[in-house]
Amino acid sequence: MPSNLQSLTTNLPHYVIIVAGGSGSRMQSSLPKQFLLLGGKPVLMHTIMAFEQAEAKPGIILVLPADYHSYWQQLIQEYSFNIPHQLVTGGETRFHSVKNGLDLIADQEALIAVQDAVRPLVSPDIIDDAYKCAAEHGTAVVAVKSRDSIRQVKEGRSISLIRDEIYLVQTPQTFKASLLRKAYEQPFDTKFTDDASVVEQYGAEIKLTAGDHSNIKITFPEDIAIAELLLSKKPQL
Image (tube, rainbow, N blue to C red; front, side, top):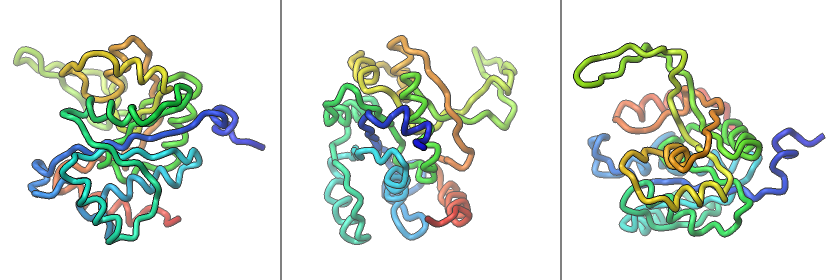
């Protein structure tokens, strides 16, 4: 029996654009965080491996700053990393980097995920569920409910928000190619913080799909230690 995922997406090509434009500034490191070691290999390799292990088996497009292309090639050799992927140069902002990745995808009927390079613990199941949701609804943004109470500061005054209505957005963020491409034809706006904000501005409804609190983003030095612990508890494939 085919799975629900296969029955919805079997005839659609799958891609992922992995965006690795971050610097090491908040990590107190001169090396961009996507290249820091986690479990004995660079963070970025764990992220690529998660998509390679997904049922969807997407074509992988990696967006890197031009200055780090040769360094990445060295790492590939050093770690005997052989997962196929295409490499493209990043842009001035994340928005422009995603656009550069989109330029490599000609198929208008594809499903395209966009993934932060520094979310190395995303699970293949979450990836596949997002493709399934996007196939059905056109959009799929991975998110988790806030565990903390939330306050918003406006004009110097803090206001309590309803915690059960607050979701923390993660990646992948997955879309039908035709929709994502049209959304990215909009002029750049500083309020575009992720792909969901770009697609929502275009006029599409954003569907949320379940994430996981272990799908952390490597941003600060302590995140590597947390990721090491979480990685050690993951079942080895």
